[in-house]
Structures are given as C-alpha cells and as structure tokens.
Image (tube, rainbow, N blue to C red; front, side, top):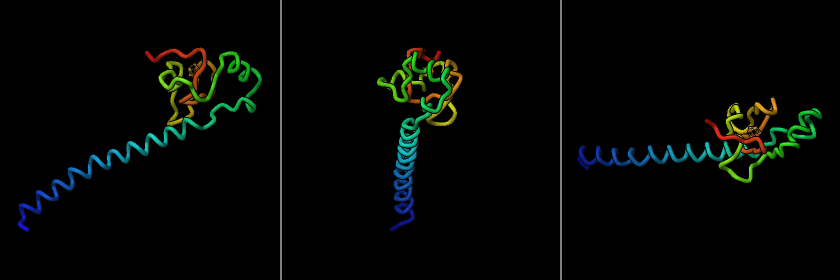
Amino acid sequence: MTNENFSRRKLLERSLQLPLGGMLLATAATVQTAQAADAVCADLSKLPGDQRGLRESLNYVEKSMDPTMNCGKCGLFEAKGTGCGHCMIFSGPANFGGHCDSWSPKA
Ligand code: SF4
C-alpha cells in the first residue's frame, strides 16, 4: 500500500464517518424530543382549580392530534429546553407536543 492509497482510503473513511455521526446525533435528538414530548407537563389533578378550569375550557391535551398544530408551533408557547415549556395563555406549563383551542401559529 502506497502513501497515496492510504491517504485516499483514510479520506474516504472520514468522509463516510462524518455524515454517519451526524445522523446518529440527529436520531438521538429526535428520540430525546419525542420522549420529552411524551412527558406530562401539566398534570390537571395537581393544578389549582382556576388553572385546571382554564385548561379544561380550552380543551388542553398533552399530545396534539395534529403534529403540525402543537404547542411547540404555537406563538403563545415559550420553550424551555425540550418537552415542557410555558404557555402564555395559561401562565403555566404546557407540553411541546400539546394543543388547546387557542392555538395560533408562530409569526
Ligand atoms: S395557547 Fe394552547 S396551543 Fe398555544 S401554547 Fe398554550 S396550550 Fe399550547
């Protein structure tokens, strides 16, 4: 094996390793986000009555039926890492993957 072949081989190996590493990181991030979205952010049984009533009147759910219209894509949602964030309407926790009747798209 010549140095030139060695260099080409190494270059080819490296060029294959970088995209594979990126794909693994992206997959891990997706799994982490999905797991976080499955977390219960606003346990209705543990919220004060007024907080619970507002959520119930706006039909808040922890998991949106339509992933294109979830809290993470709502203009009233403030993300705090992955999963649970803050809803400006409720002045409290909401799930990144959640939804309520006041959903409005981010500007
Ligand atoms: S208004 Fe509704 S959809 Fe928007 S962040 Fe709050 S709970 Fe989620």
